[in-house]
Length: 494
Image 1 (cartoon, rainbow, N blue to C red):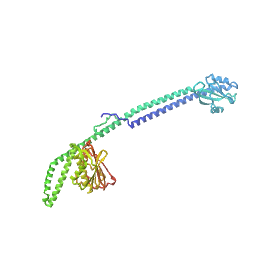
Image 2: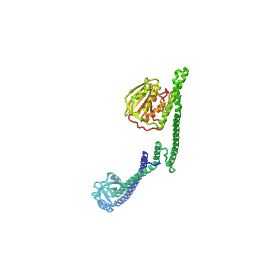
Image 3: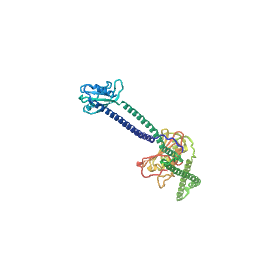
Image 4: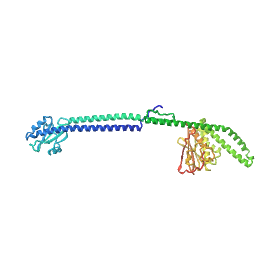
């Protein structure tokens, strides 16, 4: 089977999204964790070095006395570290006037308690960009009571390195997401490709391509699935071919039987006609028997005619003879010729259809005859109307109605609601009506309610019919009932 492109489905999109989420969350967690660990390590190392330098300078400052503060600050400044000396009641003295940040009160409080304390601050020296500093302080020389000494260490390089690391990790995370999207789409497409092929194969089989098969490649679960699908398709194709052959044999049998019966039945009809001419000269007992024979021969002739018509419809040998048909006049002629004038009420619009007169007559005759026969003596109402761009012919009666379990089968061939099949009719009348209506591009609907009667609606196009024949014997009837009020069968529709 040729492989066709299957459009991405929601499942493929969901798999791709799931793959991207897993990759994004994993790589994001790794990037954030790495950044946090590196930042903590760098800042801890900076604090340790600064604390060691501050402790050394504080020990060196122990021997200084009041008035020697500038010497102390210049000595610390010479080591490239900025210092700030604080005495009670006086302004802080920086070793470099450009590096004179405000000392936080919290830090001064800790140092005043004799602790070595620190705090990271952001400070912008005059003429320079803002930078990051580590401010570490401790008690000043004992000779200068209440004094504090602070050292200012630059951490700007550390934070620049951390910013670069953050940017690199962010870019790497985006790259991982893009790669994960591409890989996820590829994996999802390859993983779900067998499902797409299976869907295409199922649709092809539903469309009637029974030779459709799946390629069983590899040894994975999809290969086993394809093998099972192919086995199912083989069995289904075999069964459908068997059913088609059986249906073809049935159709041939019906056609052969009807043709074989035609000649002897024609002879019986002729003999029954002669017998009918002499009924008035026969004794009463013999006359009753002869009348039964005449009636049975008439029913047999009607059955053979219907079988012949069904055979022609199945074979598609009947052609349409389209012409203008006056629907009201046709219905009046059908009703009058069959002696239904006292049973049928005709009303509705005066329509002219472009259709086959003989087939339309066959349809309405079968439906009206069915209503007269099964309407329990109630008046049969026939109404002609319009429905959009089409014409409708409604045949309704007030008879016993049709049970719900039988409504969907009334157009099937030889179907009778009465299992005993004791009612009149062959069970082909409605099937012939439906086949002819579909051949005219229309349809028949049925509605029925027990105790309230039945209504058959023929829908036909007003213009010439454009039809597509159904397979032989297939019914496309649209049936609906009020199944809440339907009970045991009261009649047999044929």
